[in-house]
Length: 552
Image (tube, rainbow, N blue to C red; front, side):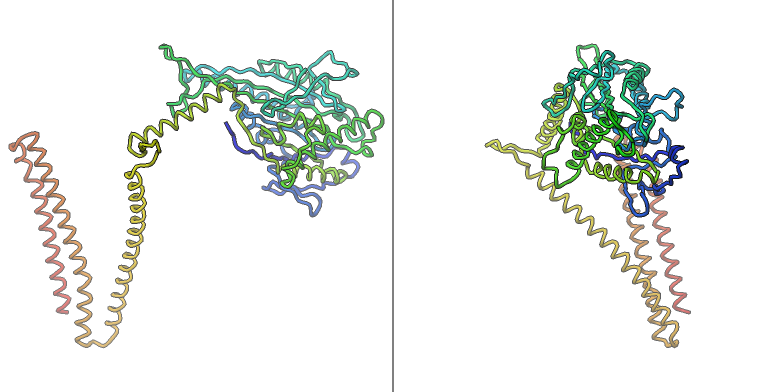
């Protein structure tokens, strides 16, 4: 099942300046346009994105904008990815929520803790809804993986006995459908929100961090936290348009189930940095070089996917293990959101400009999103579509719309073609009638205006006798039209009453015989005669009024 084309969303988060930057006298060099997703750097450099968040934005607003709908999509079988990019110290780990500060408040929780809470709340809500509707509750299985990419080595953060000196045995493979999966990674099955958060904390504490001149606790590796969601639910009944699922009725009918799977990548990238500013040496310098190489490869993939002139060329996914792991998210089967974090300080002007340009290229990437169903569910869905099509064709044969000739060639009947032509002609005639009615109304208004103008001109002229006679004749024209219209209306009402009287007499004769009708037949006749008498009286009054006008 195809889910359409999804643009890679780009959000900008501007984190407040640190106290050290304020002490050093740094100034704010960014400005967010009020009510517009546009950020201005310096005086003349402006960039527009899907969403822009200023320094006073809250974590909850960022989550609701960029992640909430992705979690809901996972319940329908869509993959999703959220990754944070930016220079070191710009707030990526804080935004993603993998820092796990002991004193952090609930309103400062990042994207991952909020997404975990949303996921388990959605599971419970769907189980309750199925129970209330009398349907079998869907079954969910949730697995979690936590990987670290350190110096181009893929490490397992859930592996408690790993040795940093040993070479990693994790391998990256691609399945027949182009999906990326890893072999040799510890997968933990979780059943509650607390258990998932415990796994996330253990993995985050094992992540490699170090201090630099730009950040006291700088991430020295790229971290990818992955949630695998497998859902088994009852298929919607093909003959129930309301979407209710068919339940076993005790007569041997079995429910049809479908299996949906989805994976959600939460990627906390290490910050891009310049060795001159970080003051890194030795191992810290090697880590910075490896980080920048991975981000450069990621930038090359984004450029190849976002540039229309390069889409037909080779996309260098294999230049780095980071881009290989994120191959599904970049130009693959995933709804992807990139969160670009920048510093508002003028000291970081060049790093901020590079981040803005980097994210601007990512906006041009389009992913083709598909629902992840097992083969049996896909076959059931395809068969249902085919059954619906065949039922429609059968109905067309029964109604005579379709015909099959002696040679087996299908064609539409002459009656269908004639009906189509008549419907087209009927539509055209309706348009013409409407246009003619508008023309008649315009001509009637024009005629009334002309008569009024002529009457005013005649009154303004000399009072000669022949002009008076002409004026009387014109003034008499309009009442005659009104009389004629009223008479025609009275005749139509009279005819309608006679028909209703005839139908009533037939019904009375059929049900109650002639005796029962005689008592009730006088009322419609009296009403008809009253209407005719009223019309005659109105006609006499109008004639007397016209005679008085002539005498004047």
